Amino acid sequence: MTTTSLPAQLAGLADVLPPSAGVDAAGHLRIAGCDLVDLAHEHGTPLFVYDEAAIETRCTELTDAFAAAPTPLEGRVAYASKAFSCPALLRIVAERGLWLDVSTDGELGVALAAGFPPERLVMHGNNKTPAELAAARAAGVARIVLDSFDDVDNLDAVVRDGGGPPQDVLVRLTPGVDADTHEYIRTGHEESKFGFGWANGQALEAVKDVAGRRGLELVGVHSHIGSQIFGLDGFREAAAALVQFAAEASAIVGAPVRELDVGGGLGIAYTAGDVPVAVPDWIAALTSVVATAAAEAGLDDPVVYVEPGRALVGRAGVTLYTVGTIKHLPGVRTYVAVDGGMSDNLRPALYGAGYETLVAARPLAPRDLVADVAGKHCESGDVLVSDARLPADVRAGDVLVTPATGAYGYAMANNYNLVGRPAVVFARDGVARVVIRREGLDDVMRLMR
Image (cartoon, rainbow, N blue to C red):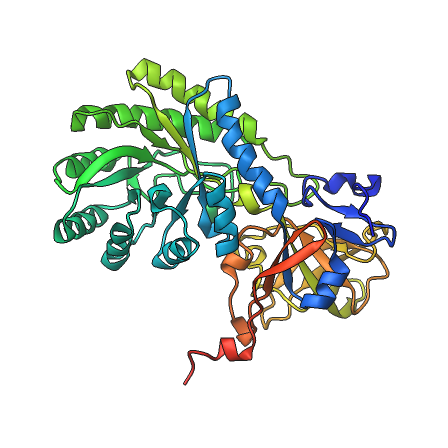
């Protein structure tokens, strides 16, 4: 059955659903040519479904934005694998020439298992263990971002013990930029657990410390002001601060500190009212600020890194659930309970994240019912979507769709109440392939004695 373009009734959700979304002659919602009702029946629910071509297109859009920017600079796109990682995804990222950032030995291990080139790996983390640093060093990770004075000591010791050339490093700056986002995902303010403070002088002390270590080579500076950001002002402010800091660092080490990693944080649309910044506008703003500030500071040939996570994979994914029970509390609210919850999407419980909802078999039906979509877990806070808009005839057995769950859904999935984590499929041209199988009871119990 051929998928049509997105009907006018769903035009308000065009930026929330994957680009391939459409409704077929049977009235079912399709992604990448796959009927979501059929996928739910074939693979079970909860189920993550990704539009594979949408991921590829987004990779290209990000890399092309540097070449198309009015002020072109050398740019490197490093996918933030914490948003979602599996070998199938990382191979796509690698094939399109992107870099990759990892922050644990687990993320590093999956990257290496996927065959990701270590010369395009960046290692992050506010509490990297000596073992993780040793693993990164042994793997040939290209860049390691230093986050604390202990980090400097530990990495220097790893390099001296193992021998070989110095390790290229970046110092993470806390620039004092207070991004306009939820307090739990702001990371650029002075009270952040990440990085070295600029205002308190620790960042320059860290540069001096690194400069005195024979095992470390300072090649750049890094900052990340937060996540799910819809404005450009914070990015501009942070980019200008990075250039100034890099110029000061260059004077200390006696060599150009050219690599400026402005992190990620670009927001995506989760609900119909969200208006994210377009990728070309984001890159154009960053490169313009960096080019101007670098010229003023005498910093030649800066290299700009960005680290998108949700901005690369968020819109490409949707989650499917099966409705189980419906509970009407007269004069209070209606609960529509599904077979997933905070074990496959922790964001609503963590910081009140909002989503749209659709019934896969009737996406064009008027969504006149306002209800809370509740998870199955034993917590009152396990509500996936508050005040969700649903068809008035929603019923048990319906397949419910929450769009824009491609980032931080499976990545934060857990076994609360001893449920297994969902399966993940990649869809393309009407065919879906399993890239992560569903966990069964045997999987959940495999470490138990």
